[in-house]
Amino acid sequence: MIKIFDTTLRDGEQSPGCSMNLYEKIQMAKQLESLGVDIIEAGFAIASKGDFEAVREIAKTVRNCTIASLARAVKKDIDYAWEAVKYAKKPRIHTFIATSDIHMKYKLKMQPEEVIKKAVEMVKYAKKYCEDVEFSAEDATRSNPLFLAKIYQEVINAGATVINIPDTVGYIMPHEYYNFIKTITSNMSNADKADISVHCHDDLGMAVANTLSAIKAGATQFECTINGIGERAGNAALEEVVMALKTRKDYFNQTCYIDTTQIMRTSKLLSTITGVQVQPNKSIVGDNAFAHESGIHQHGVLEEKSTYEIMTPESVGLNKNKMVLGKHSGKHAFKDRVKSLGYDLSEEIIVKLFKQFKDLADKKKNVFDKDIEALISGKTIKIPSVYTLNRFVINSGNTISSTATIALEKDSITIEDSAMGDGPVDAAFKALEKLVSMDLVLENYSLNSITEGKDAQGEAIIKLRHNSKIYTGRGLSTDIVEASIKAYIAAVNKVMFDI
Ligand code: KIV
Ligand code: ZN
Image 1 (cartoon, rainbow, N blue to C red):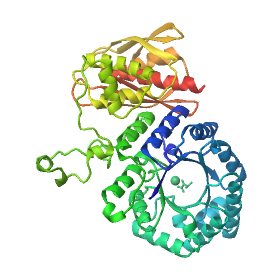
Image 2: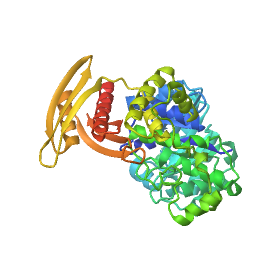
Image 3: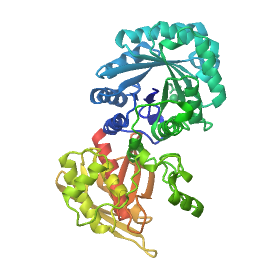
Image 4: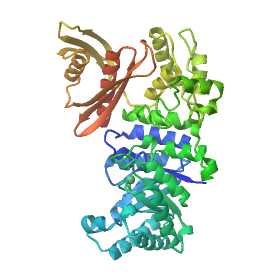
């Protein structure tokens, strides 16, 4: 049984554009729990107040996974990590120090023997707080494997329960990683006394291949993120490693606790929260991953699925039954559908969603599962709505300047303003800027359609910068200007929630 250590909320959150607020992290952590990961690295407690709170709240909320916090091999970091994870049913402190010559010489300015001493001291220090201590040798794959064998041997003697061999800079090749791990473990007398973990970055596109190779070499835990987000080019994508293990069980002979039917939902939730979409041809979770375009392939799949499908769309949680309810459907049918899509929502949220569903069914001929899921992922993330949209009017054309007049509700008072702009969306954003009168910089704006067809719902994602922090807002509507306005307001509400 291989253990899965998910670091979407720590290494993943370090990637540009992927920052999440407290509620979003809790939402994501709960979904990771439903997915069945063994360990959630919830953050780097000492890094910021926000990180500390997120680790602490996730530790209090999630009961079925081990909750880890990262800490440098420094007492203060370990103190913070413990203060945050101590509420967990199964807490873990994850401490690290660099071991490559380059890092020891230029970053740490320490001799190898000092690094070993520090690592042992800090594992012992962490062990006073917590039974479960993971030790990572940063930049392991550019370190001397015999030096690593020595440091790992000593930290295990000091109480480490997991030793991690990260490919921090995404440098190693799969067959080299295999031999590297074998060399390390065969030069230790106690390798079987701890879990052997791997953590791969994707700088050369090898993260998943390296992780799989490491599993073949005897790794008992792998570290990964949803959609492969993470520092620079990202980390090994959980969904890719898991589906490779499942699809090629004949080769790997490994099992894990992941409920693969939760994969799509977890991927989508992350994209919704961060506003970072996966590319259409991404393995497992990309829009085209199960689409058969060419006639020959379509014919083959219709005759016999296994001609071109090595795994079923259902196995990753894709629902083939796209057509769902219509405008005559009642709340009961809607609730049943939401349940069969796998969501267990409170009555209060169902009532709100049902109203939105009815509005949507009025505007749109066919309401698909994807539409319903899009509504759900917006609703389950609870951020108080300081501003809500009351109404808007847009005047636009190819011979006039666009103008927008928008009315918002704030504290039961309606406020209204107008602005001109370069097109309807720009005019709307300028009117909103005037209305909320805050220091906001538009960092990014994108528009996607949730389903196909001319009446498809548009999904607008906006990223606003306020005081050097990025806030992501998402808006849905069959009208793209309305979707954009809603996204802007959602981002502003997040800013309001934070200040
Ligand atoms: O990439 C890396 O080396 C890390 C460690 C902190 C495990 O993220
Ligand atoms: Zn990393």
